[in-house]
Image (cartoon, rainbow, N blue to C red):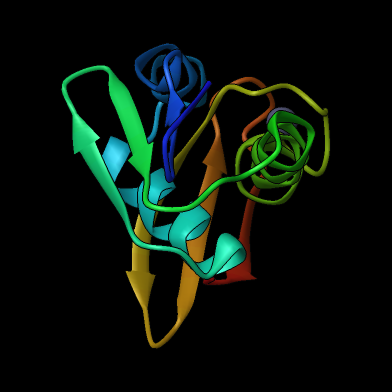
Length: 104
Ligand SMILES: [Zn+2]
């Protein structure tokens, strides 16, 4: 949803729930990918730029593919165990896989 010079992602809270990641973590990713400042307002993400909905959807999809969906079993039942030196350790609760990926 575009409002003036801002884009509002209304289902941001829902995205965060499904991803089981902190809103601030996802917001950090989106601000980097879009090179635009963002702020979290309860369940919504406010992006200080006009961004096409398709572009945001693609970024959210990419976030899931890179940081949420398990590399082994392709289920979204993962959590971040630790992050250090620019890397995240992802642990899958469905199949027990554990792997390290580069942080955004
Ligand atoms: Zn898995």
